[in-house]
Image (tube, rainbow, N blue to C red; front, side):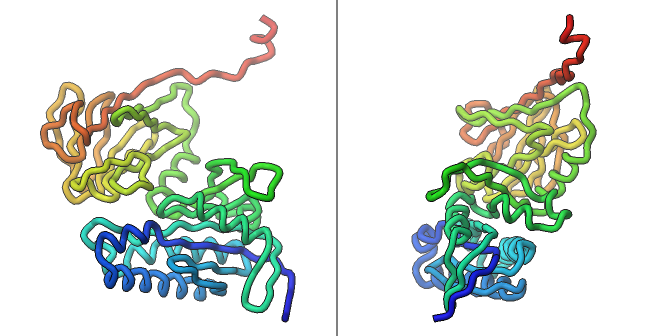
Length: 315
């Protein structure tokens, strides 16, 4: 029995909601699609200097010599599954994955790997949403500096065996999200602040310079989930860019936009700047606020608070 201690990046990649896939398209087709996904994920792992530690049903566990290798592989896995044959089956299921990664000392024993980094990576994959890569501070710290702009802290969680909460980071990999993140981080601060308030049913959402994009669609990894078969899986995005708000339609059927006091406009695979207030409807060409697929929006403006000066404090 050979046992060595080394530092590795450990990744778990889990195919999202595979049980539902069997219900939707049947055992034979589901098994074939999952097998194709596992094969692609395995090829990507090896291509990025990784080792497949084990396959557990619809999940693979991999190890990588560097944090960069692990992140590059995770990004490539996500993108590769978007192009898999059969990914558009009935528009009910996308072979998306949850990815969790950690970086740290591990024990290698024969073909298996043990240690704290394994346990934490397993916890990270449970936190991840569909199409999301979730990781930890040790891995982010081990990445090249030019990767830092793609990492954002999203939560603090308590992991079994840890006395303190761990910071959880998302690795932003989708091109649109990367573009928004880079634009947002590079923009100057204006004394007049903006926020776009969205209302869907009883839920409220906000787009602003601190949260510059929101996704809308049928799948549950979207920020606003609209459970209607006429709604596309990734229907639309709303982005904040240079003090303006845009809706970008990515759907099959389009999005109806009604600015208050104006006629309804249909946008399809296109974008439109939003006015001060109005209504979005993902299905109906005659939008109404009572529609189950309608989202209202309102822009509000406020002056940013300036730091208190010594003179102000004295007064």
